[in-house]
Length: 439
Image 1 (spheres, one colour):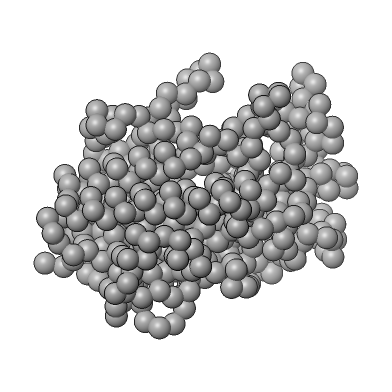
Image 2: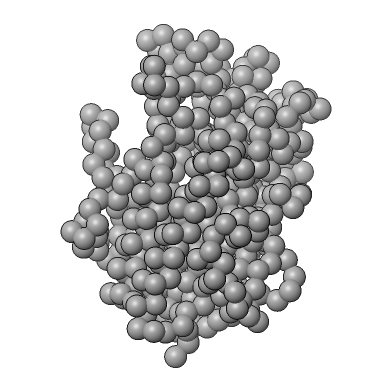
């Protein structure tokens, strides 16, 4: 029988970190480690999709951690289902090879509704009053009931926000072990997000980030033992992939404020709060870590030029891609903005459009990943005085997303057995081929 393949997807993992992770280092002692370059944009949704499909964003359609649907004038952040991916994924191709080659997918984004045999990812129930009930989407549906009995609810408050901690990654690992015991899938993809938190909050080389390595390694150690028992002594191939690495940042830019200053972005004022007006704005930016999509109404050529001129040669911006320039990174897709802004490695982009914090929308002060039209790492911080998320983007100490041009921006791809990866560095799109080759 073909050995099972277990893929651990670990954002933020660097080659130098392995020396602080004895369980992981022992797992790889007879294997191999090569560099892994993430495709641009080097953020969660696109990189995970590139690894699972072996395709580029202009083929698989995932160009950011969210979408702006022009026809509806609506932003969709962190809620999309698997149907948004427009290329076959590993489990689809395994099923084509042999219907009995089962797959499990644990917590990568965009996995709701995918064709994997077993699935688990957070899917809290949103109530009309704004409250949430903890829950997970699972395949089969009744599986979450089993986890609830044995592990309790998935600790969503520890998955993101100021309380983000090892507790969420621990629950992911423990539930994956239970699934492996019950189903013994041939391919198991497990997303372990823990290194993301401290590295962005306090910096990738901070004391907290170093402690996070030990915390994650302990969880990985328990996973190794748990999977060994669950797979009845079979010797699986473990693959470990860094989705991206996090680099220190000491600078932040505000694309929407610059567009507003130029008269291109418009706001609506409601109850003293300024909300972004998608209908009246000629241009606005959906920001995502170290890049953003600028959506220009009707792709107006004059506005495109004005927009590009605003950001060219401005501190914090390395590249301004207009129209066909986006082909440089395989980003010419209908879901992309007409202009793409890329930060310098030491800088990141905040979504703020208000000029006076007293006029910021209420959701800016909360962990609200769905209503904010862009990614907000300031949600990792908490102001004890106001009991709210602060509006101080300079607090963020680490970021990612810009093209990987230096060794500091390159992660690793590791295998527990030799003869799997070769001796050359890889790109994230190679992961799908490497997995499929094992079958």
